[in-house]
Every structure is written in structure tokens, then in C-alpha cells.
Length: 515
Image (cartoon, rainbow, N blue to C red; front, side, top):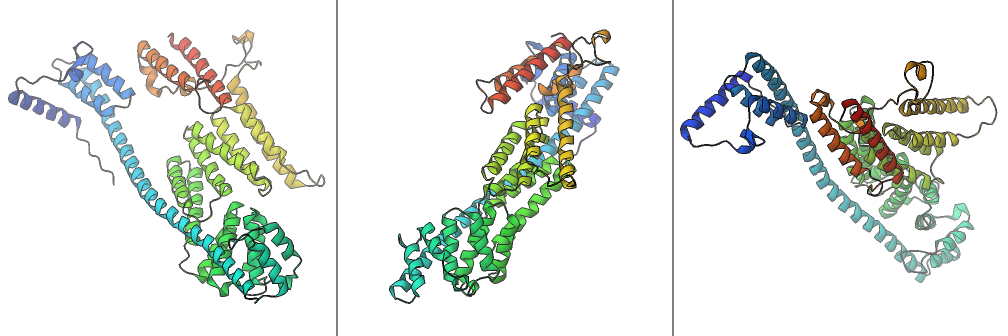
């Protein structure tokens, strides 16, 4: 638990005097380090120390600022009202030091948790790799049994064709399209557990998760000639293939059902508990997002992502849900580049799997990215995403389709809101309030937080003109280098827009501050 006790200022100053007196007695030849005692090339006066403390406060060096303010109070001959002013600022510095130490403590705790997670994650990944290897070997053993039964002539005639086709290239199985064509002509009542296993494996090898899931569902629901759970190996094979197919399709609920069935038969099966934990962490993350507690949400989604890596089935579609939440969290924390990178990956993943992804999932990705783009003040791209989501609304069968009308109206309202924000941000609109007769020949001024664009400290306005202009120049140079279109590593279009924003913000503030 975080504990931080602050002594009264009078006590701190008394201690400082006592230390100085004792140091003078013990080391009469002691000289204070020039970096502390001097302000530039001359010895610091009380006023110089005060200004240096102000600079340090701006840079969040609160402990150093507090030390300089104590030195001001120890200066002989300092005026009473100056002392009171100094004590007030010192008290504030102490409070800010406490908050800073609290943040540092929380960050250390967070790093410690992440370190433990990464250690568990490495173990879980190794275990998952071992299970995948075991799963592959199970199918090879199954193929070897098929070949052995074929050699011993212990199979019916139609079985011979299926086995010989499936195992033509070895016990690992193959020739799946030809094998499935043979299986297709076999009557449903004659399809034994063995045939369904071959059918399941072929769909998996062909990369057809929908057909794989359909066969796995039939096998687990008892719609097959024989009980696949009589053999524990068969049970593990069906559950693993079915859960993998479900996860590939982003159907975590279906995957959880397979794992739950497996746990009922084999209590040692851990994937159900792990997937359940992942889903709980996703729900917890959403709760933190709704509460606006993005620090906790970020910690929760990191925990979720770490746990996901221990699952046997790794799914880009399932990962896209985590990426969208990450996008929302990071964009609300002002980390626009990271946020949009997550959103872009989620949108790309869902669009590339359009054959198996429903339209609501694609709409969700577009709309989450639209919100992130608006926080990044890229209204044009945000509007494009909302329009893309609107284009996915299916046409109604008739005019009485209320669901179509409600969904269209909901997205149209989002479009209007984004357009209004864009209009305020760009400015230039001429109306009865903003026109040449009211002193606004260029129309409505753009409503932009120029200081936020340039990442200037909020307390900078209190500083002298020289101090403010120095900050402005330094931050502009840093951001201009970062967003220069020839050097920016991300989207060139975004770089050009941000570079222009930074330049316009610098010009606007320079005029205001007369820099």
C-alpha cells in the first residue's frame, strides 16, 4: 500500500537550517555544487531560485523545485510577503511530489504485475505449443491405425476407398478434396465415427472453418453413428478441431462450449477455464471503459491479451475484438497513433474475412475507428468510416421495416454529429454572427485547442513572454520533425495533416503571444 508522509513546511525549513549549521561546523571548506548554487554564471539570488523553481514545476520536477524554494526561504533578508508566497508554492510542490510518488508507486505495481503475467504467459505459450504438437501426433497415430486396419483387411469395401485416398501420402492425411468426394456418396447412417473424423480432419486441412465447425457440432451433439467419447483420443481431437474452427470464426461462445464439454469428460482440460477468464477480462475492460477509467481498462486489456496467448487456438478475428477495445482506450488517453494502428488492424482483419464475418462486426470496427479518428481530429476519414458502416445496412423488404429505419437514423445522427464537429474545427462559415460586418471577414474562427495540438503545458500562460515563446519553439520543432511527411513511419496522409495542424497552431499562438 502506498504511504507518503509530508512534514510541515516549518519543520522542513528548521531541518534544513540544522543541516546547514552542522555541515558548516564539520566541513568549513565545503562548497555547494555549482549546478545547485549558481544560476547561469552567477550565484543564485532568491529571485533567481524562485524562477528556476517555476521552470522545474513546469517540467514536473517537483522535488527539485521544492529544494530550490527551501533555499529561497533560507536566504537572509527575504521579505515577509515574499516568504508567504514562497511557502504557498512550496506547499503546492509538496502536494505534487506526493501525487508524483503515488503515480510512480502505481507504475511500479503495474510493471510488477506485468512481469508476473509475462512469466505466466511464456509458460502458457510453451504448454499450448506442446498441446498443438500432441494434437498433430494424435492425427498421425489415427492415420497409422487406419493404414494398419487396411493392411489387415478388417474394413468394409467403401471404407477401403476412403482410407486409401486419405492416407495416400502418409498417416498425416491428405488428398482431402478427393476424400471428401468419396465420403459425400456414403449414406449418412453409414458414416461411422472414423469416417466423420476423416471428414473433420479434411475440412481442417483445407482451411474451411465453417464446414469444420459444422461436422464438429454434429459429432458432439450425437448426430453420428457411434459415440466419439468412447475413445479419449477421439474426444480430444474433435474438441480441439471444433474449438479451433470456432475461434477462427471469432465465435468464442462456441469454442467455450467445446471446451466445457471436454472438461466434463476430462476434468484436467484447462482450456475452458482459460477462455472463460479471457471473456471475463474482456467484460471487465468494457466496464472500465464505460466508467471512463482508461488506466484500469488498459491494464485489464493487457492482462486479457496475455491470457489469450495461452489458448490452443489463435484467432485473428477474436484478436480483432481486443484490438478494437485497445483502440478505444488508447484514443481516449491521447495515444492516437497506437490507437489507430489497433483499429486499422481490426478493420483489415474483419474485411479480409468478410465471407465468415457478419455485417454487424464490420460495422462495429468502422464505427470504433470513426470515434478514434474524431479524437485525432481527422474528421474526413471519420465521416468515410461512418458512411461505410451505413452502406452495410441491408435494404428493407418493404417500407414497414422499422429496424432498417431505426438503424439508418442512428448512423445518420452519428454522421451529422461528426459533420458538425468538422465544421467547427475547420471554421470559415459565414452567418449572422460571423461576417465582415461583425469583424470576422473570414467567417467563424476554427474551434481548435492549439495548445493541445502543440502539447504545451496548461500552466504555461503564467510564464513570461520569453519563457512561453521558448516552449512554443521547442515543442514545434519536435512535433514538426516527428510528423514530417518524409520521416513519419505511419500513414503519409496522416503525417501531412498533422504537420499542417502543428504549423497552423504555431502560427496562431505566435500571434497571440507576440513571439
